[in-house]
Length: 172
Image 1 (cartoon, rainbow, N blue to C red):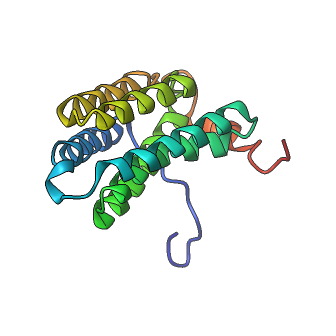
Image 2 (image 1 turned 90 degrees about the vertical axis):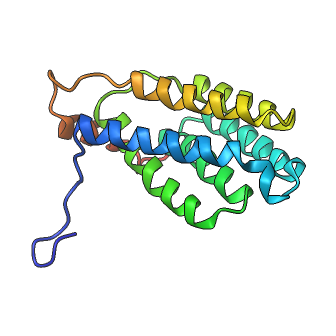
């Protein structure tokens, strides 16, 4: 919102998108690599993340695209919160919002079911206490979402965003 000018929609560039994805890789891989260092029982983290993946699957099965997008992005925030990192969870909330917006603007072809399966694989690695593998899987996951971004050369991103958001207020 701009003072005396009203509301506006943020329109991140592809370069800003790549920057946000790079920040997410650095933060989330770092979280996972040091997850066992805090003495927090990983079983509790795994339990919470497994429930989150189940909730993602339910959202994917539903018709509400906004809920599905929120749940998939929230996995990353849930991970940070589960590990006891409040400040990093807030950072990830902002970064995932940016990358979700970018995916909407630039017609990401990354499938929701694929994202959910990748989340489940990350949780499985954490459950095995293989935090190095979990970090590698997270980097691959974020990279696959980033690579799925299309180019906005043909259609104005604002038109895409308007089309994507036009159905959000309607009952399913």
